[in-house]
Every structure is written in structure tokens, then in C-alpha cells.
Image 1 (tube, rainbow, N blue to C red):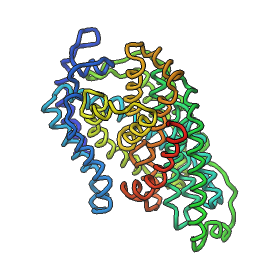
Image 2 (image 1 turned 90 degrees about the vertical axis):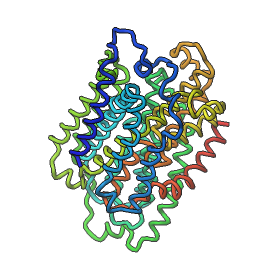
Image 3 (image 1 turned 180 degrees about the horizontal axis):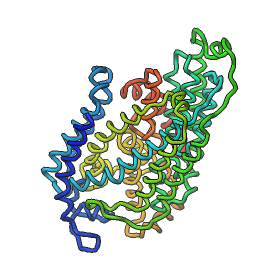
Length: 494
């Protein structure tokens, strides 16, 4: 399987290299639309303006495969999901390369060099470092304990990132509920709160807010989200406590009875040195946002030296975690590489097939979704459109699309640094709506935010029968989150 993937990716690169190798160097004049777009220039006739809406069908195919095949053909899916992901990627990539050649090659290399590879490196680093921290002792999965862990994760997610908080706390909460029969809801609410809504208050919390920070939104401005975030989190915590209490009372042998049956072991934490690696990873991410030494050109893609430095530091910190953490600690955590492998394979297909959807969005009123873009005028509309798209697309570029839409709507022709300052001061509710929509509604699906799928994979490896893609959407996020988001709309964005 690995050999097949490597040969296929090498073939794509062979197709791509001739198309991008002839592009001018940084010192030459270029009229190539893709290269100009990489520098943030507006171009006429870009791919987003020429992609018809049906080009998103391979992306829909990936989502349906993730949703349907684990239930309809579990044995086939378990053994062949990398091939399924690769199939959908090729269904988009090969025709796109044949029709659009250099532009398509540029977009493919762009999304892998600047998005997918850093995404996987960051997840791998956090997964590796957090996997070396073991919470030992008698931690019974009672409603009060579970609610406390969720509250803690919600609080720290804005400071260590939703991915960092999720990777740090998912194993302790799974271990605390090991003896319980009903625990799916624990993981679902964990995704709601720790992996998404908790990351609302700083640019460290979630990638969309970090993008805003890079474009001039001040670091602590996102604290304006505290009222809507705290109301949403409080409602979810109260609701979780009620649901968990109900399930807890249905247990034949509640977790606390199991704990009392044997000797109680004092709580302790091993592998604490991995906190230094987690902190180093977050520092590397922050460094990449404030240090700008310049770019280098890799196959026509301008990659920031700060981004390469960040990724190198994360890899180094991950390796140090592996070397300095005893194997017995990872074994005590039930640690394996399968969850990160699953995420890497599936998101390789998702990132490839998402290219036309993101390009169409970026084209704004010149793309196939022109009607949708033009109709978004009020804060509540920005909240729901940004959130709805972020539920299925990458929430970071979705945020950036509507962030730029607001700059064009309210401050056309004004330099970005001045326009962003005025947007924060004069159109606060509009920017808050985009920020909240991108972060909050990432909880709506497994692919809405990076840690969601990872948490699901870790829970399943621990024996939790997680709902399918549509099961999660229809049974949990729609009936629980959507009414809360309606209330958020009524209180904050109307």
C-alpha cells in the first residue's frame, strides 16, 4: 500500500514539475495567474472563476466514503481506506492536470506544501508529545469528574490550541470511563468543547483566528468572543452533566463501584517532561506568525522560511519526545501510530479534493458561488455561512474568505493594515460573527476541525463505538449544537 501511494504521488510530481519549473524566478516578471495569486494579487480568469460547481463532486465522494463505507463494508474499509482516499484524489487531480496543467499543478503543490504537510506535522508533533504523558491512579468516570475534565479542556484550549488540549486530555478521560458501558456521549461532548469551542479566545486556539492574527487582528482582540463562547460552553457543560448523570445511573456497575472494588491508587502524572515539548510546539507555531525572514521558492511555491523552521522544530521536538519517553509509558497510554496514519491518509484525499471548493470560494462574486457570497450582508448571515461551510471545508481559508469579503464590503481601496484596524473598531459584530462561525461550527462534523477526526480515531482504538459521520451529525451535532447556535445568533448577532 505504501509503495502504491509513493509511486502515485511521484507520478503526480513528475506531471507537475515541468509545468511549474518553467515559471519565472522571484526576480522576473510573471503573468502566470497561479503564481500571482500566491503573492496575494488579484488575477482575472483564475481557477476559482473557471471551476464549475460539479468539480467538488470528488470531495463529496470522499465525505460519503468516510460516512458510509465504515458501516456498509467495515472489513473493506479497514483494509483499503488509503486506496479509497487515493482514488478520489486521482479522480480530481488527473483531469485537472490534463485540462489546466501548470495552474492545477501549482494549486496541488500549494495546498500540500503550505497546508497539508504543516497540518500533518503539527498533528504528529502534538500526538507524539501528548502520548507520552500518562495520568495514573483511580480516576472514576463520574459525571462530576467528566464535567471537570471537559471544563479544564475548554479553558486551556485557547492557550495550547484545540489540538493540543484534545491530545493532552482525551486519553485521561477515556481511561476514567474505561469501565462504563455508556461513554460515546463523553467523547462527542469532548469534541464539541475541547476540540472546538474552547479555542475561541486567542489566535493560539484555532487556525482561523491565527490567520486573522497574521492579517492584523490584534492578539487579544478575540477575547471579545468571551461572552458568546462562555454562554455556549456553559450550556453544553450543564447539558453534558445532565446527560452523563442519566447514563451513569443506568450503569449496571457504575465506575465508582468498580473503583471501590479494588485498592485506590493515588493520582499521579508521568512523562511530565513532555509538557516542555508541547510548549515548544506552541511556541514554534507562534514564532511562525511573528517572525518574517522571507521566502524560498520550491517548485514555484513560495514557502516562508519561518514555516520551514516551525515544521523542523516540531519534528525535532517530536523526535525528542520519542527518545526521552520510556516505552512503558506509551504502552500504559495504549499508544499506537494508527490514529495519525488514518488521519494522514484520509486528509491527503480531502486536501486534494477540496481544492476546487476553496478556489470557488476565493473567487467570490466571480465564482460559481457568486450568489451566496453576494447575499451575505448581515452579521447573522456571516455567522451561519462561515460556520456552515467550515463544518465541511477547512475552516481557516473559509474564515479568510469572508474576512476579506468584509474588508471589500466596508473598506474598498483602503490598505489592509488600516482596513483591519477599522474593521475591529467599527464593525466588531461582523468580524466576531465570522470568527465565531469558523470556530464554533467546526464541531458540527468530524472533519470540521483538525482534532475532531483524531479524537474519534483514538476513541475507536480504545474500544469506543463512535457514531458514523452521519450518525454524529444527525444524532448529536444537529439536535444539540444547532439550537444553541440559534440562541447565540439571537443574543449576539441580530
